[in-house]
Image 1 (tube, rainbow, N blue to C red):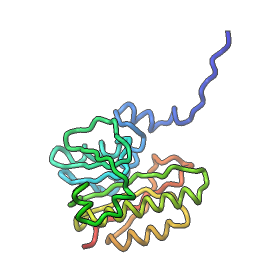
Image 2: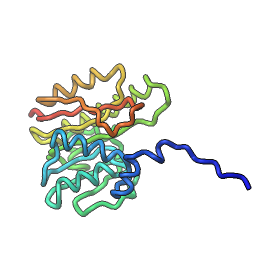
Image 3: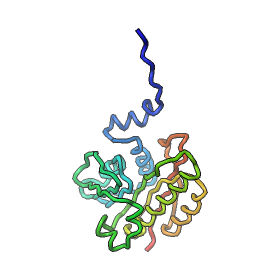
Image 4: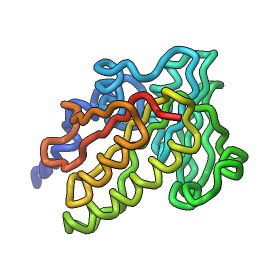
Length: 206
């Protein structure tokens, strides 16, 4: 009788993936937002939060817990999200790039306005070519920033994942023009081999 081959998939034995499953979150990415929240305290009770590229739902689910029953979380994604959310959460199917191109009034009709926080953990479909992937990430980030500009309240905050590449400094400068302060942060729960990093904008200007 042949011995069954062991499946050596490091992601299957990943500590954060196991923890996410145990705590009923659809993906390990929730711990990145948890670390950001613990360090910067950006999301408040009763706040209104917009989660761009929300699938599979971990960030929206965690944000909904933080804002509580009096808060509101709106998620946007290209595809339907199967995760079941609490009553204070709604997911809209939409293309973030296309939404960013809409004027403020039309955008408000689709996803609302008056947000206290805009979150983006979006990542492009990767090609394996670092410069291409970084450029695609930059365009998604600029779309997220444009939406944040149009939908955030004064003094609101912005959290955005970007792949480090040639456009990183340009995106950081763009964030600095919109917000009073910015932070650059890489959560411990990011995979070591990942080029992703988070730029946080604090205190949206008028």
